[in-house]
Length: 473
Picture 1: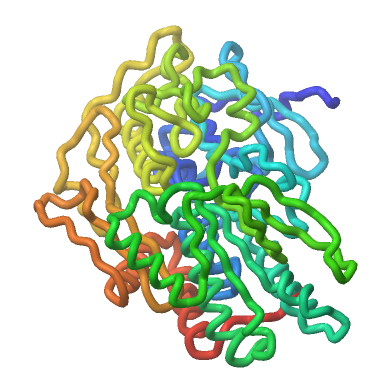
Picture 2: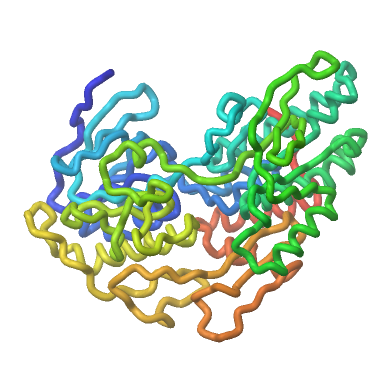
């Protein structure tokens, strides 16, 4: 194994903030930190911020890949970006050992402040066959390359099923799509897939194969969209079933098996906890989260449930003098851990940027003193909620903007029943066309560039009027 080398320019006069990860929290912090006060360095294997709310749409061609990402090198006055993976954290020497993703060359990156925003990975729960069949028939849905793999596989299944040498049994297996997990990402992907099947496959792309297609959602819990209002859960489930989707709750996938069919073809099937089996051509696994290797292997204190890094009310890792912070899916307050949501990470990134810009800039991080707690900062809410409407706080306080889930191009659900951003006692829930407009308008307002703000609705229009692209390359 190659040794780590320093290879990084000496420490600048400004305190160096090293951010690990380019997700919702890391991107927000990197963009909002005052670069005149801090030397900001960013480390991530992904050189872009991914707008994950639109990820299910790209997996079937409703949106194109490049319009849901923003390159991190567009961050103004960013000190340096390294396309690498953080492997080890030495809190005594205050360095991060990194490995660049191209040739595996290793280097050490010194820091004054370290911020962990590395997210998490999909949890397979050690289900037999899932890891073995990954990228063959089994796919995850967390990164852009996952969506590209799914899109290619879906089209491959249709092209293979259209071959004259394939048996009827094999066609049915190839055109069986299984989605594991009942959260918003799983449901939105299922809705997008059913839109593709109804509006593209059935009408013009593969009309002869449409009657053979089967889509199933498998959820271990009692309901899909478990945190939503029950009326919205019932509405969404009924809408999926009206589209021909089989929604199977209170059962889990126990194993993925590879076997030979009666016709001698290679076959894959999901074995369920209720004793039934689902042959499939494509399975998308989006059920549960697990810590990434850096978090799992580091010596930082971890929450007993889920293995997330423990942080205090100021997002600091205890016992390290206030030099190490963590947020997003990889971190949790020990007393009251927040759910792993994009809105949580985004607000934590904004809060931490305010703390650094307004309160930490005058502190010398190279001294032996403990970093003092921050003063009051504005509520870390974003458009369309004005920050001045909410009280300031020195601690991080998450303000829930509510929950939304799309139903493809023509519907959605919005649940404001648990929202903290509404001062009124009226917290509505609604569905259908108005919910779709709310979902689209809310996420369009979060785009970071005018380019994507224009491209996204253009692709929505193109998909509705002209259909989705079905090229496989």
